[in-house]
Image 1 (cartoon, rainbow, N blue to C red):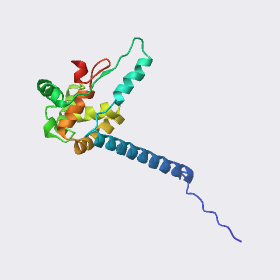
Image 2 (image 1 turned 60 degrees about the vertical axis):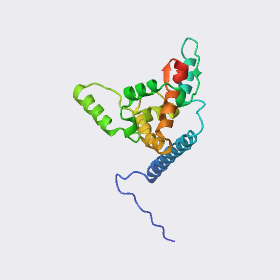
Image 3 (image 1 turned 135 degrees about the horizontal axis):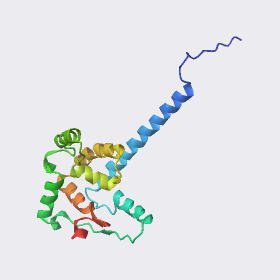
Image 4 (image 1 turned 90 degrees about the vertical axis):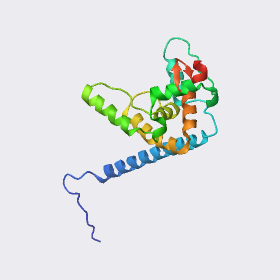
Length: 188
């Protein structure tokens, strides 16, 4: 019985490493897809159900374990009709003036932010209300390219699954107005 051995070309990586990298990339892709699906299902449910808590609220609770002082969370969800119209307009004007004109990502504002960052050397935010909402619901306040990428991916999904008024209602009820103070009702 004659056996033939095939030789690997010189400099080629071993097959085990290539297989490992492929499996790792496949697992990372599936994890990202699962996270996207999880967020999508939760966003769909949030059409009708008010969130009992958010990722940022959990983050603040965990941070309180490592810092001195007492932490008290204040969070009470109220319907949009109970939030002052003036506050609604002020938040839209201050945070996302084109809120009703974009689909979760304001590409015009992003371009301005990039130009300002390059020309003036200063950094400023360009996130839309929708991006800030998905950050508060599912992510943390820790700045990173990964978080920004997730915001970028989840904001259009939120716009697809939720009406603008519901996005505004959720945002005004979950944003942090002060230490442990979440939502317009608690802030007032």
